[in-house]
Length: 136
Image (cartoon, rainbow, N blue to C red; front, side, top):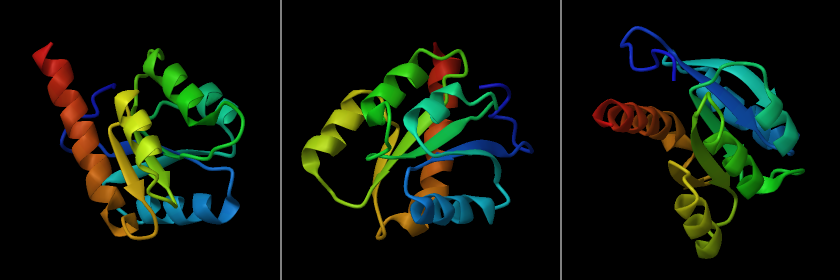
C-alpha cells in the first residue's frame, strides 16, 4: 500500500458487486466519507482483479459474478497492490464467513445491519494491514 498509512492521505477504495443497487449503496456509504477516495467500481470478479487503479481496500460482495469471491481473494492476495479486502453479504452464512476470513479477508459484514459500520471497519482493516507490514 503506497503511503496509505500517511495520516493526511485518504484511503483509496474499490467497490465490487454484480448487483447495481448494492454497488451504489456501498459506493455511497464510502463516497460520502472524507476519509476515502472512491477510485473504482467493478461489476464482476474479473473487473476487480483487472482494475488498473491503485486501491488500498476493496469492498466486494460475497456473491460477485465471474471469478467469485474466493477467486478475487486469491488474485488480490498475490497482487503487488495487496489491498485489504472487506467482504459484504446479505446473509450471514457461517461457512462463507469462515471461508472468507480463512482465505485472508480483513472483515466480513452482513448487510444491511452492518452498513453503518462499513467506513470504520475499512479504516480498521487498513490500519491493521499497515501495522502488520511495518512489523514484518
